[in-house]
Length: 343
Image (cartoon, rainbow, N blue to C red; front, side, top):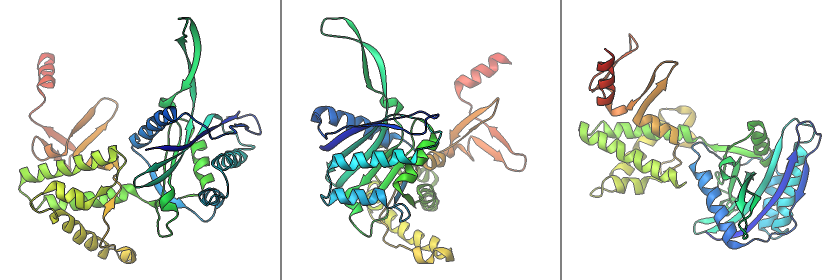
């Protein structure tokens, strides 16, 4: 994943000050090894976040998209592009009580499946180190654990008119109002509801599993969720064909065909979605929270914390909906021992 561009611009905005102070870098020059290491850290942070939004540029706020296309069409340099974006964003913060510190880091990289453009809000922190003379000195370094918002733009897809999900955004450490301000500045428009798509997919999984013997059904659910979680871990979509093949090598198209049939059936039952029936949808973006909830139930109040596998419901754990109570058998050995000692 070669990094082709890397530059940072510093922003300092006091909530009591009417304007932000901007200190822009003048050159897009970097040491490749350092830039690659930073890119790896930031990408891992971005991919590791559970909640992301996916979308496109809306027509109401055209400046970000326009500047990006100018750069892609060689009408301006990367340095000029990032300087203008930083200054325009800071102008939106004028006369607000938002606080900003740190840097906007702009990176571009070339990948086999398309080029990417990133914007990260990063911060520094200080610590003590030893110099070559073994003397204690103060040093400053990037605080990756305190990374703020992150925007990823697939510039290859951006230039394809039919594409509707070339933008992805994740919230990070910091004031959410500031992060929303940056999101609005980009003209971001949601085009994918990952939670809804995952819930729909899991309903189909459950229908598929209910056709199988209990033991095989449980194993199938676990395999599907594990596969989806693994794809999400690496920031990849779940391709139905690949998942179907992984699930049953002897009938690699079985689950994929079942998904196609059920997706058509689901949409045909919702008149408002008649025009969105897509028989050949090949993939979806998994929502990590929905996947976890599918295989586990969990919750807590002031005195009790509970978490158990969904497979235990109806077996070791019985739920009485009328009384809103759980009956638990086969208690964990450690818990059972504690309870006996207490009694």
